[in-house]
Image (cartoon, rainbow, N blue to C red):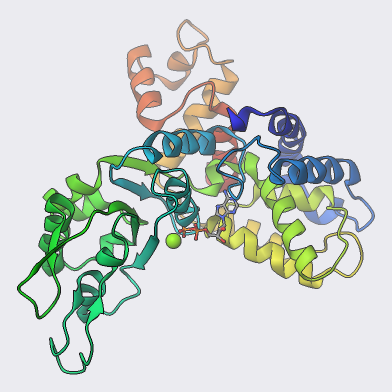
Length: 388
Ligand SMILES: Nc1ncnc2c1ncn2[C@@H]1O[C@H](COP(=O)(O)OP(=O)(O)O)[C@@H](O)[C@H]1O
Ligand SMILES: [Mg+2]
């Protein structure tokens, strides 16, 4: 598979070495960081391999724009591949900035509809009263100001893909109409009694927990089940911090080219600080941070605003964390200490004071497995510093 290419597994080793230094970094960025201590080796190898991988060379077919080599994102891309060839509705869930738009586009680009329209509508960005006419269109004279007929997004996307972003923001009164068009492929333009048909592949995305909205009667359960045919959960960046070095070199490459700069080095402590940070705004926040850093850089060594990183990591330790995050972190830490032995007198179950079956159940519920241990453990490290 493309993401298991030698390019990425080689990078993985560099990344792992970088992650190993992360704990040490936490103890003293301010004292250890010197402008001279840079990491040309790490930067040049990752950057070169990253560039090679990004040039395509047929290795990461179809996902050239999506950077990420580690488990969590690889699983997401496997789901993308699986669902892309079908006509089924996909529901992409994840925090803001995690890459939901990219994933939606990747599904379309890898689908049989790739040569047809990809139409996007952000349901949260359209005023309530206009959403219906945006979706279904209107006839001339349908309401004051409707001077010409307007085709809605469902019609524009006919034979192609319609991406409904922030679908959790669709108001309750519009939800039955959306359900109807998804189920029957039928709708009417506003001001018309003539039924229109559209053959549309739907992709929906949300940063809200739709199941909770259903429980609170804010989202229709029948519409939820109709959307939730093939759910794809995009993990937050803090749960895949191993991807950060690749993303950093990717964005440094993009912005230095755009700003005509020759940035060849990233100081070790900068990379480690970037890996340690919890990035509540996810990849979008990281991308903006790198853009700002490239603007501030004059020589060939990336020079981010040092205060920003230090303050961010101080603030991280004050951020509230959920009970689930604390639990995941504690279980991962105990499993590490027990060398992933579950049962027996020195096993993790005994250390945690629970039955072996209960620990297996909790691990399953929290998505903890030995294969994922590095990503999960590092994620816990990042967001829980100072909390446990
Ligand atoms: N894995 C990734 N590789 C490269 N760029 C990414 C990745 N994930 C997100 N981005 C970039 O981060 C920004 C935010 O992504 P976006 O898809 O708009 O997030 P969301 O829709 O979840 O809010 C975009 O500029 C996008 O190109
Ligand atoms: Mg988005």
